[in-house]
Image (cartoon, rainbow, N blue to C red; front, side, top):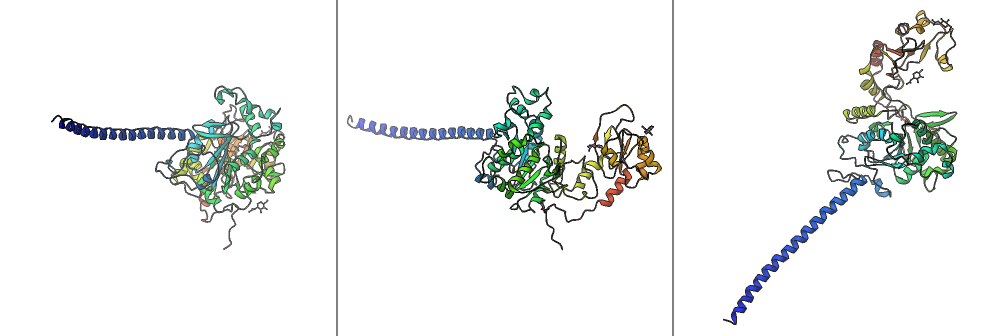
Length: 498
Ligand SMILES: *[C@@H]1O[C@H](CO)[C@@H](O)[C@H](O)[C@H]1NC(C)=O
Ligand SMILES: *[C@@H]1O[C@H](CO)[C@@H](O)[C@H](O)[C@H]1NC(C)=O
Ligand SMILES: CC(=O)N[C@H]1CO[C@H](CO)[C@@H](O)[C@@H]1O
């Protein structure tokens, strides 16, 4: 027994040890698992935080929302939100061949960019925002467009004082700029940006078909824009927008937005370094960035602007003069669009399920027609197609005189400049006059429909801005013109004769 007892004990002990060992082993494995799990959590959270910091949003459905182009370009993805799963973007067109490049300035960025990213930008597959200072707005990266400008152009140049001053701002820009003429300073600096923005955009995103350059108060009608661009050949060297002239030099107006094809971008920038610097010093004596872009592009490549107005448009829904030639035309951009207006146009696009084309007349029906009133005091309806004024007075400027009708006046026309009431009577008697405006003894007739905008109230009757609309004639005009051809008149698209 004494011999066997220890043996039994040791057998029991061994069994216990085995059980203990299995238990401990299981515990160790379990705890390792737990540890991994814990690490996973931490890791997952860290990655998530890092991504959020970088503003890389994961699509909720787990699909990759990106496009092929980013993979090939060595770029940071931090300025690009994901579009696919954003609420309200389901019907939005595929913009993956196009890059939106938006220009702003630090003094206005916070008043302009938020509504852009809340509306169209959230649905785009990619975009870049450039300013005159590097910033982040609610997680969106804003790039400095001017960091590469030559010192020789910056030094001793008063245009750049805001560029350096706004970086020293110890609070927010609005407060730092309270007591200066920030609009003027922002404008003076703005002209140095355009060529640098184009070069930077190309270096960061070299593989897009089309580059659309806009201001931060430009509304882009994307479904119509994309549909139109898909009809054009990006392998042709193209630069187009709303034609403007400086002296005799033609350029595409920047605020309306201008489009540059991949072929033109490659011709301008590929295989060359510091291209924009070639025009830094020349810009000092010039007025504007859009003009400089046109000059530089032409000098470097020979490419000239093509006019695509009114499809690329410098006006907005309330200021566009609605007339026969443009009524059925597609529209892809509008300018000077305030945040509330931008939100309203976007809401209209959503309501239409981002349908194309948006025609100019669609804007009339949505925004202008519901606001028609016979008259609005303290309002400028911009009616100035024909002016009636006191022909024996010498107080008018050349532009007013060039628009004045002074010959073969009817009795009503002769009296039109005397008061708002006589102006209205003269308009009502004229079959082409759709609306009228009276201000400072000038009666203006409008042969096109325009809503216009408020003016401050003036006390004396002569200086007051008074606007009127001949609603019956307007409705008859609209009815007559409202049938648009199914075939759309796309600018630059060769229509094959049938
Ligand atoms: C574009 O502009 C160029 C230069 O002015 C001109 O030669 C060409 O015909 C235009 N193209 C179209 C399609 O209008
Ligand atoms: C037109 O201008 C002349 C010269 O200033 C002035 O004598 C006349 O009273 C004006 N007529 C009206 C109707 O304002
Ligand atoms: C907004 C707008 O176009 N206003 C115009 C109204 O008419 C006057 C006089 O013709 C113009 O100077 C304004 O620009």
